[in-house]
Length: 305
Ligand SMILES: [Zn+2]
Image (tube, rainbow, N blue to C red; front, top):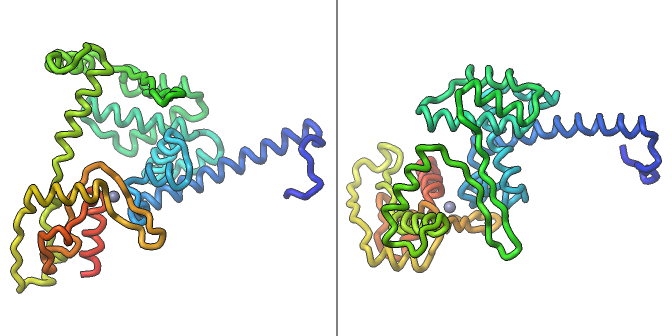
């Protein structure tokens, strides 16, 4: 299509617009194909193999998507997997990624507020109602159809000194909970402002969760070593501290690229050689893995056992 003498500035107005129209069509077609790939990568959990703890981190770090672009695509891909008919709507431009992601946001809101899961037919009905509408109309239609107060998008604005301004909206109940928490911790925070409150609560939660958990006792696929007895003793706290000091984050490694996961969330102690296969609680046999990679390793071990 592109030859070396081609110069877009020489196109007539009509040709320029025709060209643009064609490219937009191609772009939508590609968007749909990209979503299909994302859904399949998600189903196969291929990001785990590549030493990423989540699909989101895989897309942001490996492919350079911005945080919001990655989220929009992941949400849309999951919806597309559930409602395959969507593909023609995306291709024709009747629906776009922002709208699909708004639908997923609304579905989550219903689940949170009413503790109710929308089924596929309800989602299809919503999707048909927002076709060919703009962002604002989409939001209004979704809120009215599901009796939601507002669909709030939280905003993060990063400043030059790397400080961040957060804009969040809470409903009445959420605000009451936060106020209650703020009163309860009034003795511990210096200033009664939200920045101090959030930071204090977050630190407490991190402290609570970084008490390392040991992964569930693993056994291989049933029957493989049925005649062998093995005993599982808990890993001592001092050993846990040593291993956490040594590793600090998930050590899962992609064998081809050498990339290490490095996630610091949901960390667990893993026995490199499983207990059932004669592994011990010695420091040399222990490592830190995130919960996702611990499960991934377990699935592989079961598969090859
Ligand atoms: Zn990991």
